[in-house]
Amino acid sequence: MSGHGTPVPMTSRPCGPLKGEARVPGDKSISHRSLILGAMAVGTTHITGLLEGDDVLDTARAMRAFGATVTDHGNGEWSVQGVGVGGFAEPDGVIDCGNSGTGVRLIMGTMATSPITVTFTGDASLNSRPMGRVTDPLALFGTQSVGRAGGRLPMTLVGAVDPIPVTYTTPVPSAQVKSAVLLAGLNAPGQTVVIEKEATRDHTERMLAGFGAEITVEDTAEGRKITLTGQPELRPQTIVVPRDPSSAAFPVCAAIITPGSDVLVPNIGLNPTRAGLFTTLQEMGADLTFENMREEGGEPVADLRAKFSPDLHGIAVPPARAASMIDEYPVLSVVASFANGVTDMQGVKELRVKESDRIDAMAKGLRAAGVTVDEGDDWWRVTGMGHGNVAGGVTVASVLDHRIAMAFMVMGMATQKPMTVDDGSPITTSFPIFEGLMGALGAQLVRNNI
Ligand code: S3P
Image (cartoon, rainbow, N blue to C red; front, side):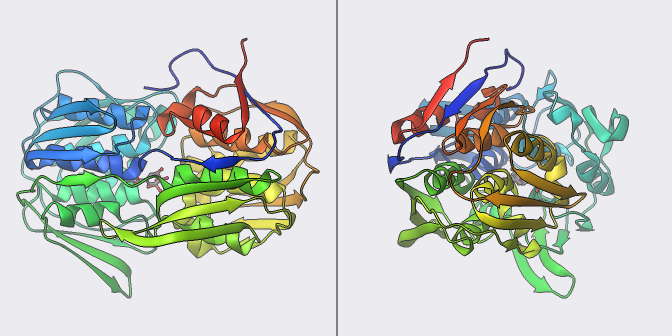
């Protein structure tokens, strides 16, 4: 439950080369899903490499509240003794998902077709985010909901007693919405179908198949069509969570903009629905290579080597790539500030409804640091200043958003003067070892007393 405590201002000073190996934590999306699907299986699921960030810990607590036995064995090893599809008990208290949109939206889907009533809340960031995108399709199953104005948390959902399966075309490119509908479909009889016009991260589909659900995916004229047969008995799994490409983005981008750097980021999942940033960086002229390409657990994996890249150039990022790098635009905009020329990012309206309005948050901080940023409803453009020319020397707001805080900490490694964020505490939601890991590579991050 992040963002509830005292703000922790944090400063990043321009530093020498970043060198060494960056072992980033487990994938956040896969960690949430491991706990949730483990709770819906019959028997004990074993998980290694779980991300022990606040977001995922909140989901672990929620699964316990629904009756699953979730045990922390230390060192990222966890087990979940599930209650089976349809076996969720009604929690005694309110489910607090902290900062996590993924947590709350996936859990809403999971309980929506069970005859229980659940009240959800979160921190100030989560309580300002739209939930209608999930409760609208859940209503088609027969789930009722009542929340604050604009479909905001706190919100109570009354699960459908006799759920009916649905066919739903997602109106926004969102893996959270797709996953909520599929998870609800698990406890509805017959076939639940989700059609997405643009492919979003497909971990839910892959993992449902792994847990033994009957699920098919077809490319059709309308888009990617996923068909799930309801009421399966899910089989417990042994899951090795790969390292998170969205967390890898920070040491990778830091190395690219910091003179003399050479950083290896081992074991990163390169699922095509997640790897758009790395293609974009290569198109910008970054010295980024994939070593030891292999397959693990059905996913492409590689070790990433990122080196200082003095001759970056701006590009137009194809809008079709947006979903595969949606969480990486904040740190991409930092790299773009050190490139020559304009980096144009279109088709990114979803950035406005993340943990913060990420276009607004980054634009404000980048401008304060001396960078020109233009923006519209679903686009923004960063005019790069070339290496060594970005002033920095300002304090910017992290607006309860871990990725905004980390992006500005990366920026301060290569600006002329340090960058400070008013609150670095949200970083623990997804990357609790960020300071130590970056410090070991050579970054100079300090917490400031206020
Ligand atoms: C996630 C989906 C994305 C992403 C989030 C994780 C997931 O959100 O931004 O960090 O695990 O399903 P949207 O579904 O809102 O695009």
